Image (tube, rainbow, N blue to C red; front, side, top):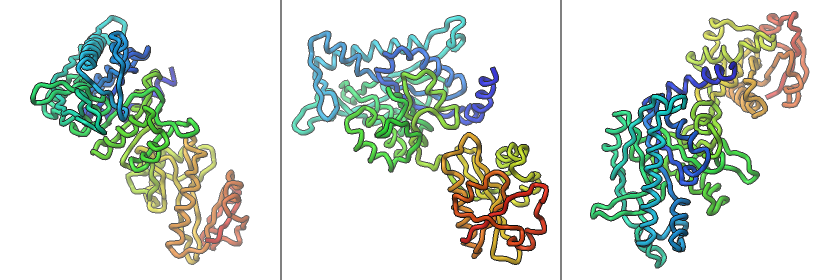
Length: 432
């Protein structure tokens, strides 16, 4: 029970931040066919009930493959794109139509004692995607395979304003009445860009982007994507990653890659600080900067537990407000997770490094080293030659980073006179 209450409290800032925002969510055909599909629908309904404007784009690849096989037709691809001749288009229309009806049916459920009870959702779709033929590439005619030409931003916007979930299928129409088979990643990316969406969420089989060792990459910038695309080659992860980067370059604030196989992956990604998938983001998700008066509350939250344990010297809010200009902080998605302060010492070429603290949840990530570098750079910029630190618990950490044992006698007089003999802090110094 305590974990649930804790989670809800930590999620509340995200609930407020996501309200009235537009999310485009892409679920491939594999995700619709997965046993976790029902849970994903429940999570989408929850997002809708929290005020998120939802555009759901579904895929249909395995369903198309099944229909081609049933008719004895051989799938044909070129450059990882399906060649959609007339018999194949019939299978595409059949698969997409049945999928669309199945998704609408699941979103229309209102069963007692289920997460859908009382939802009363409206789901709408239509000819919102105008497409054009890919044509002939490398001498290969793609027939009815197309690409998105434009998305009806105003038409979709009106439905979202009416609290309707918009469902987009991987089909597009031309002004001449032709039907084109589209990649759902293309539809989702263009919809997110043309709608000016706040987020694009891409479901895949993996938790997100995995590195060469199989570890989850939690966050990256669009400019870091090409190197990963080369490594991934023709894997489906590459298509999702490329779509995420294109969306960000097109003005979408954030793109997320999450797993359709993992229950709750969407909620974990959207309502927890560290998420559970991969975030592609134009902005710095975590940054180190100098503190301002608006950071006082966050600083107090960070250092108060350490003050209670006697690790840090107590500082009142008034003291923090007065000395806020001395602090450098590490901010992660609006939360202050680490801090350090630089206090130049009067009548000397020395300064004290004080109040170095890292949130327990973010230790062992090198943030202490980053702050130490920042403080040393600030001290050098002021023309200071020596950095002192007084500590009761972290002597070894400072020794490993070039600090040498010192004494009260070595402290400038202004600081030596304030030494607290009750704390009996060890004194270290480092030549800059």
